[in-house]
Amino acid sequence: MKSLQIAAVAADTSDPRAGLRAVASLRVLADTLELRQVEAALRSGMNWQDIADALGVTRQAAHKKHSKRIDPTIPTLRRNG
Image 1 (tube, rainbow, N blue to C red):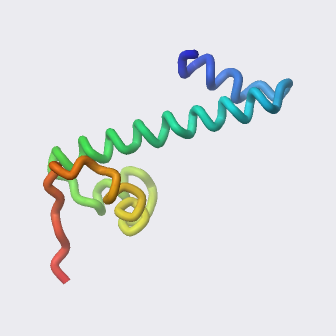
Image 2: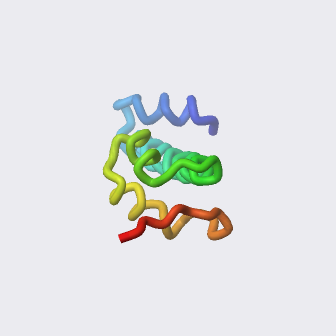
């Protein structure tokens, strides 16, 4: 099923079971797309603060969610501290 069809099922409240399954599918899709964009951002030289700002979350939240999931070949900037 295509993303727009899944979104339509998720928005339709006449069948909550199908709607909930569709919402779960969209969540997986959104998480996958977010990770791909985070990896692209890191490859382009963005830092965790830039990524967090774009996502509307804290740097710590962005790092915690994605740092262990990103492609390990992507060089990331380390904070000195």
